[in-house]
Length: 361
Image 1 (cartoon, rainbow, N blue to C red):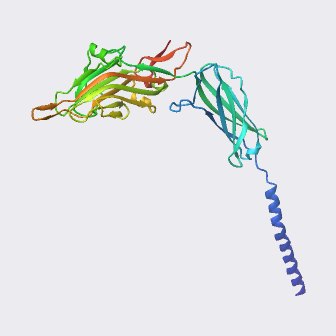
Image 2: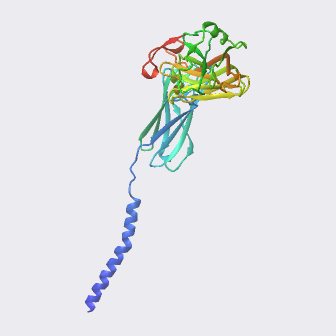
Image 3: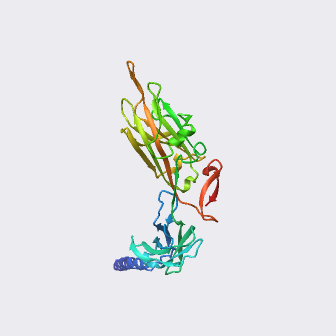
């Protein structure tokens, strides 16, 4: 019995020693495990974007004799910790040599234990216009690198082209009257009675002399429709400004409403409305500009009197619309090629289907 007792005690001692040492071995094994080095990842952003409504980043310098500063923001993630990063360098390439390149980005802020934000700047002045690329390389202590990039377009400025009836009437811009029974019309091809040549002269200047139309039938509104062929490619246009001056009167609600046709939705959108007899109506488009210009470059607006013609006994209250002046300003970013000039539409069925363009000075 004594031998059995001694054997049991010995087994218990061995088991106890094993249990006491196993956690230590396990702990040591965990502390000695090696974390594999992984390459950092880099996400790049550029500022300013002077044309946020246009795809891509556009850097515009109105005065190339002065510096335009561009800020690079690189978000760098390293699974071994943000402090494993030893350098973040940006290289800028494009049509001209950028003297500030390469740019060493500095640590700007820490997001968490693995991610930090680095920033740096470079200047552009009389560098060639065109497409540039910023490549940012982050390097860690283990020698691994990660690369991120961002493209941008450098431009000297934007241009504004005015479309009115001083020239091109009946050639690349048209006006129509005189009445319609819906407000606004459901289609963009009514009314369809074109102005005569001397009518175009009446609406070519802001001088108070008007082309006036009035209704002949009850339930009809006096209306003028204007169609412009826009020469600039839709992708380069940043803003459309529409202005109409004239008068709208009836024995009801005076004034008029300005609309623009949306080719995507297939209906008119209201830009402005007033109830004065004499008025100026205005409106601007800065987003989804391609929705308002079709593949042939056509842009269509209408101005419609606010009330339809109506009669009471022998009295007829006609709807009147008078156009003094109408114009569309197109703001766009000229694309410069081999010559200094603006790119304008020449032929084709639209930029979406491979229009032909030329540089004109």
